Image 1: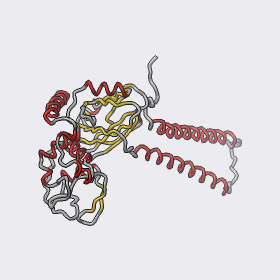
Image 2 (image 1 turned 180 degrees about the vertical axis):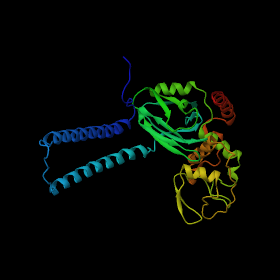
Image 3 (image 1 turned 90 degrees about the horizontal axis):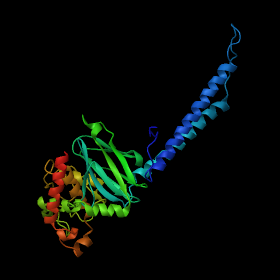
Image 4 (image 1 turned 90 degrees about the vertical axis):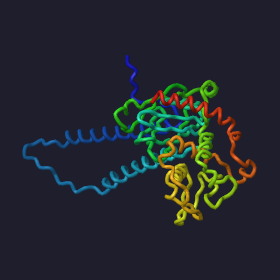
Length: 346
């Protein structure tokens, strides 16, 4: 007999919350469908015409009945609204202690980078029982990252970052799909998510080829494009503000508005620096639109997010390769190996 389940397996902490709301809505729909069908059948039989010229008696209505059939649907709709809002809030509230992975969508593949530097294409290995955050962007068109067993789905957009998170509760392999039509080979943009025990995951990490971490790669780009000449680590300069500890904090712009310096703000400040000028600074920064790849932009943002406060800068002046554990020479060699793997897959 064919194994054809009606619903995907539930394999994350978020999945039972989605399933509870879904099955309640399904049961509610079935109940009222049967109730209405039974009422129609009852009236069809009880009030059928028994004589050829029979005329029905006039109905004057019932205020109580009208109140009942207005209030009950209102209460049901409000229950679904607040329940759905609570589930939605859980889905978009990313835990602060989640491990961050970078995902780049491209016709027609998913490129994923672990915080340690490991790279994967169309596969994602994660440890069980650990909160995972995916920061995603696209190199070309709109994609959508969907893991049915985890009940998580998020559009992946060119030119900005979107995020989702999950915590796997069962080991095994689970399907990964793109659910936004993205071109001729859209149906082939699939992959697998492998959930492993924590010790097995550590063994998997130890056995793979380690490239530069996103933070280390971002630091290299920061030096390569001479960003440090305007954004010094120790205090503000005349040309640009310090980047220490800015990620996630509000800033006042030249027009008086206040914005949160999240991932999308940091990316926009690199590719379109004149769009949101910080108060007190001149428009001197050149645009890097088209000069840095989407993965490179993600690495720069990761590096900026990793920078501590000004107090940290005084304790650890400079930002050489020793801050990240590996020498840049070794990282460059590993990066070449992983890039060749990507090129062969593409």
